[in-house]
Image (cartoon, rainbow, N blue to C red; front, side):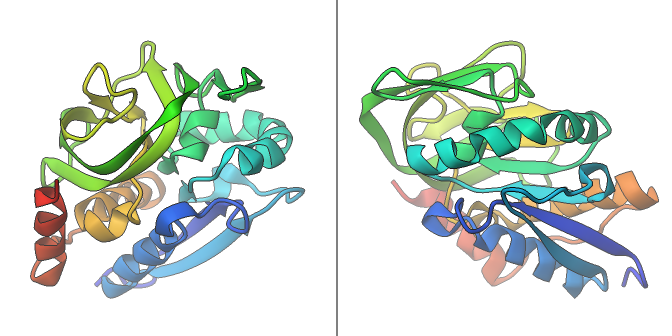
Length: 243
């Protein structure tokens, strides 16, 4: 039990970004933290709000279609300076699909419209007419997780190409960033971008535990000791085996 320690979990634009169960990721992190005696609070961050990103312990952003990305773009750019500073300070940030794309230099739609991103991750995304859809699994190479695999569901028209940032790892089954180079996601400090929906943390509780551990180490210098077991582990293994 972790005593009176608490973590503040920010949720980016929860009323707009939540495709394929992504809103569930924040709930899963909260529940796993509470099971270990932590006090966990969810902080919604909507358009026009003025959050203190540096005061958060963990941040989660979900997926959205092009119209939602266009709606949040200006607001996200306005929040960009403080968000970048928080990530550079080690803020754990799970960014999925639409949020992931807007953390790069730009996202270009199928119609050729280019939406400026934060440039927080060294990558760019260009949409194509054919979507990359289906179950996906990968071998983690640049995240120190208690288990070395992740699994989920992907559905995206964007093809993401990395610059100097590292991918989460290598695709075992599915498409990943662009369907060509077998990479999936991107990692910068404790900021993790990925195309895995699901919600991804329900299928990969060890990733949820990694995020909570990173949050505790940043705020308290204390590790979070938890290990998926029983049905949690079975869920991950079942998702990993899906083709």
